[in-house]
Length: 122
Image 1: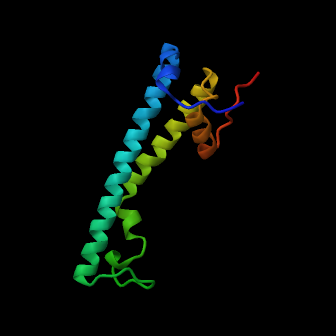
Image 2: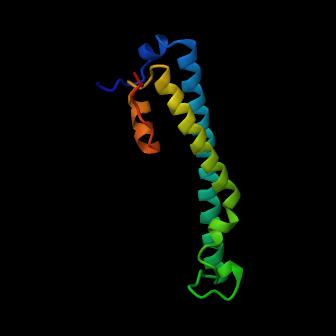
């Protein structure tokens, strides 16, 4: 089946349920983007501060702030939120396929990324 782009014409022909599911996916994408941006900005800020202050991650750290995994540790809450959002995306993608949206290119791409079967069971 050829993938269909999500255009205004396609959107106009969606059922209320299909529209709701696509809106949920959009909201989840926005949440993930917002959290990812926070992590990226924080990482850049910490890296710049470490360089300015002469602190560099070391293979054999003498202190916690020198540990190569300190950024993962400091951003663990945000990373956990992203994991939860990914799980929500997977569930929403399954619902999207179940209501007949598996023909949309965006759904097919995301199903492939998230390891979801994109064809509706018969």
